[in-house]
Image 1 (cartoon, rainbow, N blue to C red):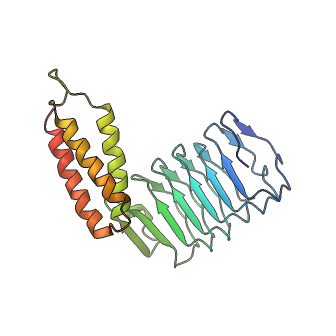
Image 2 (cartoon, rainbow, N blue to C red; image 1 turned 90 degrees about the vertical axis):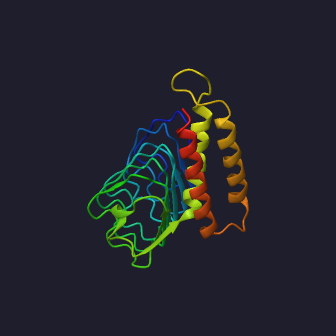
Length: 231
């Protein structure tokens, strides 16, 4: 079930008993949905959620995998409380807050992949999850907010390199070369772009391991520093 952009509200029992639905997509235009909108939809196993505020989806009792898109800012109280079949969560970079008990008692949760650089976890956000659950996050980010919930933590340099390359490309796409104040010196964009292209190629190479990615991150940091010094 892929709901199109433009839908803003989902009413009570809108999809009640639609047991044949396997996949659910909530677009960024969704402002609100009733907590019982998807009652008895136990067949939904995967969900892509992109609405800015994620509220109560406990009715998705069979959900296994959830991906939060880049428009998601807040995951509210009890959003997936006691969804025992939930196995994996991917949290995009713009998620800023996960409220109390949002994923409490999700005893089947095995992995959380977080792209978020700055995130606030309220009290008991992940209380009662398995002690075997693994958190994977970009190596250069602070994961202190997650302490106390995850004993298995992977600081991933490949993930960090990917995010840094995306952010650097965004910087290059918006920067201006020229002689006037605030512009970069002519040729500086070309030099950094060449480095970004080279590292993107290496990132796509399946043989690139985490230790190599760590060295590429340092290369990119040096390239960015040099670029920013030539304004």
